[in-house]
Structures are given as structure tokens and as C-alpha cells.
Image (cartoon, rainbow, N blue to C red; front, side, top):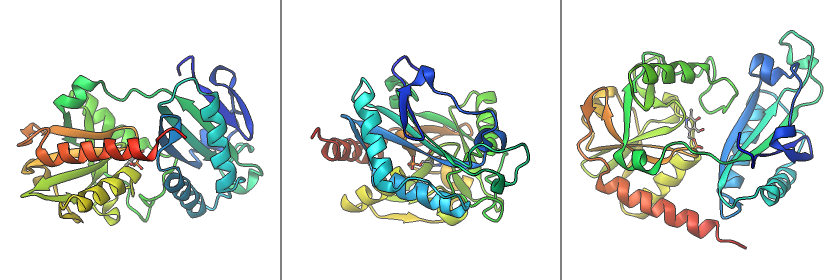
Length: 291
Ligand SMILES: Cc1ncc(COP(=O)(O)O)c(C=O)c1O
């Protein structure tokens, strides 16, 4: 947490240092809740509508009623951004099942907890970003959709964290998770793309990829720029033999990958990545112009 952090909890805005929730919150006790990570630039949240839609979908999928409308949450975001001292940063929007007795029955929680945090986010420095990330393919698999559908952005990140521990152990920056069938799903906190012969490919959500907002933006930018793009089944072979490979996410933005399991990626950053990265920055500048 930085000194600048601000929090909004169930309608109350306060400095991050004064924010707290109950130890009986089922978000903490059981990971029972959903969340969004949202970047803001020039005091404006990027793709807020899409993030709120996905939050509502995630909540609906776990039978959690968000006690605020999308309009009310949009206002809460405006309020916290007004209170935050810098124009650029990161928002974490969390909805938990709320406070209840020990025991995981969600019906014992009567009032969901809604939390918004605004703070700085430093994922990686510019140097590292330019050099590209070193990735490994983790032995930890993405949870199968009949266990937890990858489209639900839930508070359960333990298998992603296990994959990330593998990356740390290997001295890598990111772990790629395969699904139960051995197809590439995504990174521990980002989506993955490969370029082959000028075509852009990314795993399908049915293979366990979160329907990332950044992924969607990048696919649209590719199409706008005449780059053929498809969501399809990819294996580790496709990562090992890619002309280019990169990660996308709200936190990550766009990060080129320089190596996968010790195999150097042919071009890092490659021309498709560079084009899309510029187009992405231009889009952010356009969509977040100060009012
Ligand atoms: C597991 C996972 N996949 C992909 C993403 C990228 O999604 P988005 O671009 O919407 O941030 C995230 C971002 O939080 C994530 O946690």
C-alpha cells in the first residue's frame, strides 16, 4: 500500500491506512467473492463499462447479488478517483459474500461487502518491459471449467499463485498455465498471444482463458490494423516456435515475452507487438482524455 491509497467500503470513502474489514468476511475466510482490476489514466478509468459488466457476470455466476447498480459503482469510482492524488493508477473492485459465522454456507451472509481500492501499481519497470519477460510453462494446471469456469474472476487465485511460485523458483517472470487437456490457457494474471507468419493467435476461453478486457482490446486493434487474429487451441509447441509472443492484462498492459522454457522467442519485441503496443497507448490516450 502506498501513502496515497484510498478506499471506498460499502459507500464510505477513507484513506487506505484507515480501511479495514471483518475477519469474519467470507471473502477472507473462503475466497467467496469476485473482483476486477481496472487501470485509470489521466483520472479516468479505462474500459470501466466492460469491467463492471464482467463483475456483474462473475457475481451472477456465483449467485452473489451486488448491492449497487452499475451507475452507483461508476459514481463510486468517480469519487475515489477525485480523492486519489495522482492521475494514473490502479483500482481494485471487490465484492465478497460479506460477514457471516464460521462455516462456508453463503446463505449465512446477509450483506455483501463492496470494496474499492485506488493505489499506484508498479508491475515491472520500463527496462524489464522492454527486455521482455521470461516465461515457463507451469506444471500446475488451470482449474477445469466444471470446477471453476475461467470466465469467473473470483477471489480464488491459489492455483495461479502455485504456478507463479514455479516461475519464481525457475527465475522466470511469468508462468503459463495449461488446461487439463494440455492446451495453453493463460498466464498467472494475464492472457497470452503468439504471432506466427503475421497471424495473431490466443487461447479460447473454452481452453481456460479469462475473457480479458485487454485481450479483447488487442484483438480489436489487430483486426483494425489488418492483422488476422483468431482464438484457437494452442499447445506449448506453439509458444516454443512462435515468431512473437506477448502477454496482455490490465496490470501487465502489453509485455513481450523473450523466452519460454529456455527457448528464445524469435523476435522480442517483434513488429506485431510494437504495432499493437503503440495502438494500445494511442487508444488509452484517446479514451481517457481529461474532461
Ligand atoms: C488470470 C487472469 N487472466 C487474464 C487477465 C487479464 O484480464 P484483463 O485484461 O481483463 O485485465 C487477468 C487480469 O487480472 C487475470 O487475472
